[in-house]
Image 1 (tube, rainbow, N blue to C red):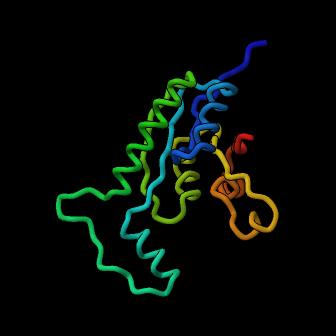
Image 2: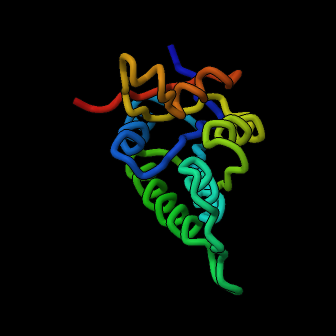
Length: 158
């Protein structure tokens, strides 16, 4: 009995060991015509505003220098290229995509999966349990809760 391949796998990749493990599992267990590896990033000015807003400190007067690039975007491209190389080593016909998050990382992943009409979303997870998991929901948990697509969540290695 022949297995039918998926048209498109979307792989969320942030450069962590858990994300690397997710790529490995996608390559070993999923067949697809195409894989899109997505690295979500948030501009430094928004990161700074969020962090200082949480601590009650005043927001720093920080902007990207004229003609300069946001360091978060530069780092995201580097991470995405690393993930692309890993996906290709895992046997996937992949392409990398960096996506700026305007809201939450999980929401950006779900939006891109919808935009591309992905057949499945693959993501790693931190694997938190107990009280910590109730307080600090992971990106993978939110993708699973909010996506209308199948989601393969790869737990951390042992």
